[in-house]
Amino acid sequence: MMLSSTYNVLIERKNDLDMMIEILKSLKKVEESAILKSSIMLMNYNIIEGVFYALLQELFDYFMDKNIDIEKWHKDFANTIAIYHYKNIESPKGKKIATAQNLLKFRKLNTISVPDFKEYSQVNKLFSGNLDQDKIRYISKDYFGVSYRGKQGDKYLYEIKEIRKALAHGELKYSEACRNFTNADIEKYSISVYDYMKRVIDAFKSKYSNSYLVKSS
View (cartoon, rainbow, N blue to C red):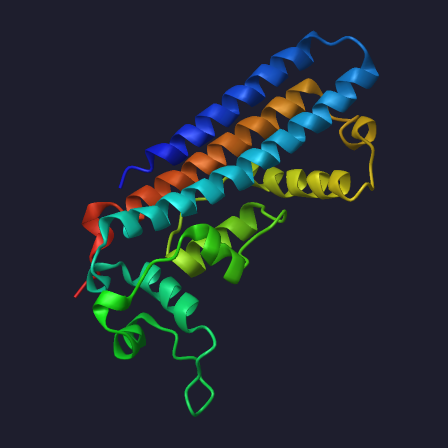
């Protein structure tokens, strides 16, 4: 599993953002610069959510296209699909039975299906305008069994999310949200976003490469 499409999404959006940063450097007026800085911050959030969505879409597509037998799914992915299919079914004791093990008990192997990620995300609302480093780490670990190392700069994703929220809700004007950011700050935040999202993609690629596809016996 190469995740080449997701890498391309990251690179293409980074190229757009880099272009805007070069324009920012050429601006002389404070007001124009402040507005563009806010726009670049929104572009950074667009990278965060757009790339993570593309990553999960490509992961789901991989299992759909390959038509891989459920017994060969990685247990973390199998659990996630089990919860999708059986999230509302409970045992007599009230305990959830939506696990990969019980999935085999309730459906024949040839009727188990991997939903399109758009369909899955509508049923299980993982995120919508609220992604930061902690949320991505939680979803990656708890839903897909993926872990990766953290860095000091990861904290900038939280700040980007908060700026995006303030702008989306009309709490701040574009000329206000990033007025106190220097051009160097904008570049630092943007580099951090690219670095973080690449680490996430790399971690998913490692977890769901062919050597890790089959569950351990």
